[in-house]
Amino acid sequence: MTDSVYKVIELVGTSEESWEKAAAAAVERAGASLRDLRIAEVTDLDMQIGDGKVITYRAKVKVSFKFSDKD
Image 1: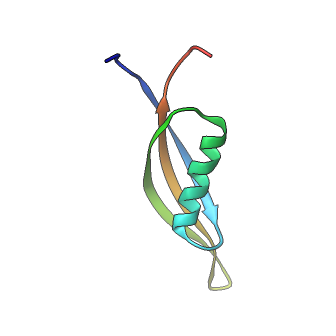
Image 2: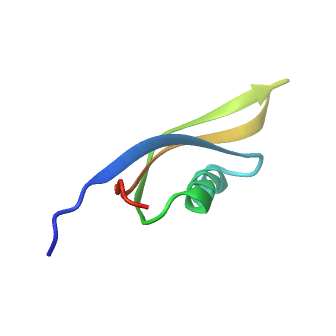
């Protein structure tokens, strides 16, 4: 087995419906431009509020992917 290196980035996904959809949006967007996604960790949840109501759910997500300097 070959040793591997993984890079971790932090993203914030948003949704008007739920934290779950906000986290999924972050992962899906990352998957559109990064290869070999491995782990996603939700590190923080919050909400944007306006007029006393939830406007947007936000999920801060750390995503790891296999690091390679070769294309």
